[in-house]
Length: 92
Image (cartoon, rainbow, N blue to C red):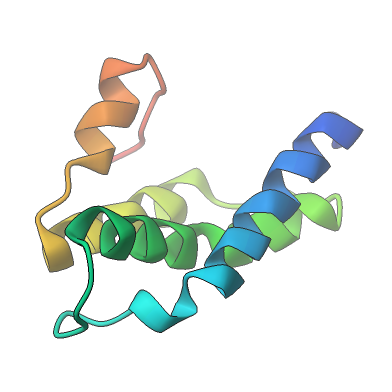
C-alpha cells in the first residue's frame, strides 16, 4: 500500500473528531434527529479505521464495510448503497 497522504490523514482525523462530537447521539433508543443519529453511527463505525489511516496503517475494507452495514441495520440508513452508488467498491 502506498504511504498515507496528508490529505487522507486530514479526512480520517475529521471522521474521528466527528465521532467524538456526535457521541451523545449513539444508541438505538437515543432521542434526536434521525439524520444526526445516523451520522453518529457512521462516524462511530469508521473511527477506528480512520485512526489506522492517521497512523499510516492500512485496514481491512471488508471489516469497514461490515461496520457500515451494522450502522445501516441499526437505524435504517442506506450508507452501503450510497457508497456503491458513488462508485466506491464495497467488499462483501
